[in-house]
Image 1 (tube, protein in one colour):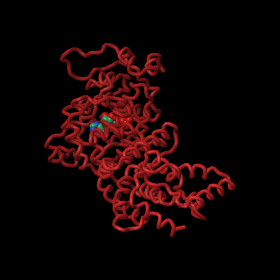
Image 2 (tube, helix red, strand yellow):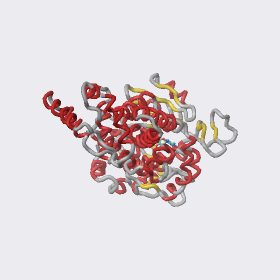
Image 3 (tube, rainbow, N blue to C red):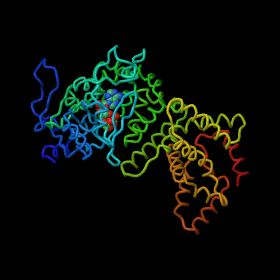
Image 4 (cartoon, rainbow, N blue to C red):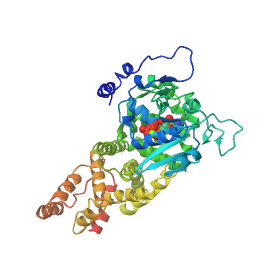
Length: 466
Ligand code: ATP
Ligand code: MG
């Protein structure tokens, strides 16, 4: 690692300026600012072997080859990049021919995935400006400006100007290790600013997911949104309703499972974007005092697990995001006379089917999510064999964590969580003592914090049940 960069790593941001050479391009000049190798801290040591292999093979075959996007941005900020995007003038077919281990993916946006073991390098052909002459399979835009296809090839500069944020439009050239900065991205990295390239309202219309990306990067990088980039979000937020649910599922995972979930969630709420992703949950947060806290506690726990390199599952996250509307619907169904167990089933069903109109939740996550919810009704029932069955349930651990989150958020009076904490670790003798405590206190079921009519009704099925 070079000396300057080590210094920079210790105090990101502050030293960046001094690490670059002469700052300003001559006044009035257009084209990129090219920063030669000796004037920037980005080194090949920051890049994976696989990404370098891709760059060199393209270069040796006579193509241009650059690393671009998050990996350059993150290296400049002193973070080790994990994911590598390559930009080239080779077409997807030409890339495909150079790498046996590659395949072309995407229709809206065709790119090539080159695979090396578990690592995938994304190779993108330079995009150009579409015009009316292009056939629909190459370029297509809806009447309200949404880009349905974006496969017009272009040159490096055109490619740069079609990227989202200035800080994502920095290119590292494998031919001479220089960095090309077409949109003043370095300046924005120094001032920790996210600024869309071009007219922000137009760019959000072309692709509303850019609003989510703005929030994601702001949270992850601790950047602020430039006022002009921030201003149109309020009005443009409903455009997210046009995005296919499968794409939003991928984005939601990136938003909440990257270790900055709490901050991301607050920003999404602040900008009115959360309501476009989880409308029913958003409404429930205005009605139930614990609902927002519950999601924050769940995200805090997810963020902590990611920091500690422990596994996290989207099932737990979705269980938390959608629990408040499930509870609202369950109460309503019980008020109409339905017993608690079928009411939870029906409420879950309704919430999931409404949510699927916005965001896909693959079955491998929605089934465990519903187990976590169902187990919330079983955790209070601690008599006879049942307690051991619950303990053995494959989703017990997640359901127990979920119970703790509900208690921490103030949805439930604390108590049951502690009981299960003790029970899990106890030897047989201690377990018997804990079970005796339940017998001595037959009403030992946690009460919802705000007492409601359904408390009385709820006990009935639990008595029949044991
Ligand atoms: P990270 O990988 O850390 O999430 P990233 O910036 O690399 O961040 P990717 O989704 O990997 O994000 O995209 C790579 C690059 O492709 C971006 O940096 C940006 O230049 C461009 N890009 C991605 N999505 C869009 C988009 N919706 N509109 C315009 N450009 C985009
Ligand atoms: Mg990336």
